[in-house]
Image (tube, rainbow, N blue to C red):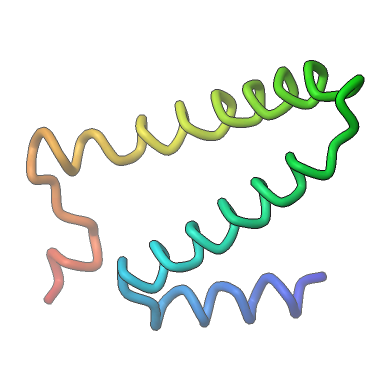
Length: 81
């Protein structure tokens, strides 16, 4: 698993925001296809689970991003460049 995570870190260092956007669209399409495949009787539970995952991931991401947006904060790496 460590090898997989290291490879992902190296890949992300070389990505641009456009590459990440394409990755997100890919995952969105996968989520839509999986959502369509969920039986009708389980759609409500799936929707709740998806909502919890969304909130649980969106809040930390925005908490980390907002200082960059509001203050024009530079990363430690950019300060040295």
